[in-house]
Length: 292
Image (cartoon, rainbow, N blue to C red; front, side, top):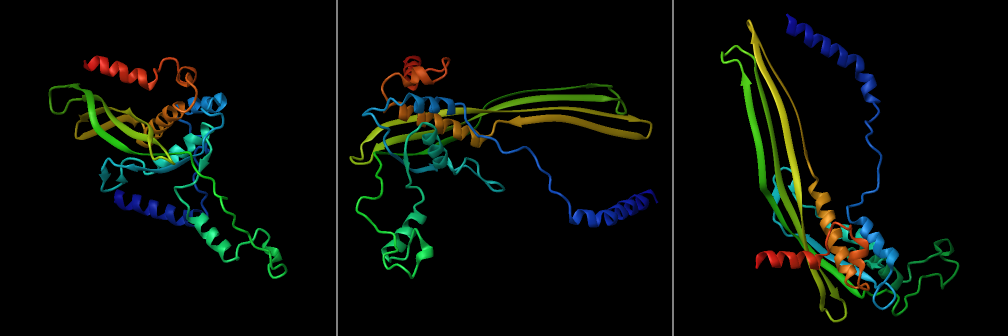
């Protein structure tokens, strides 16, 4: 009887709200904001520093920065970001380096083909009135790159460290009140390998590898008990995990910073990186010393 009454109330409420739901306003969350990484400020520092070897900032192209981890989830697809090349393009822009498009030249090829056929005009309203109303093609009109940036996401390692605690306390009898508390933390990491290549000679000018650890945590509390013939269970908890894709952006921007600092006058690492973070060459030296 009670169940039937509850179902009728729910059905009636749904029917009454049907017209309102048809015109319901969508939920709106937080506004769009800028998406910097911890190294965006260091890249901006390079732009303000402007100490490029040779004077002017070199034009740079970005090629494929592929996901080479092989980590795929059957439900959600690839675990690592497939947009690392886009992260690199954004990083180059933050550093003040001119970027030439090589990643997606579809539109450029279509427009160039239209121009060859004299179908493309910068004043289409004059079509049919002026026989010279088409965009001309000139030798050397496409800007070339001095360097190009390629590489890959090469590591995504799960649970390289973990810790946890689980405690339960309460009455010994089956009908008593019991409480449960547990907490756990785990660490994984993601890494990229990037290289800067001289476009003309195809010589690899510099290569870097950076990794970042990603931390996750989970906490929960539970309470069970009975009173007479009635029992109950209550649980509460929270958990969080540092976004993997944001970690990929972070290591890409760190790698781009190091590669660009290598084609600026010395001192970029000391003047632009946070004081508590050593430059990559110092990190490698410390790691080599520890290994020996």
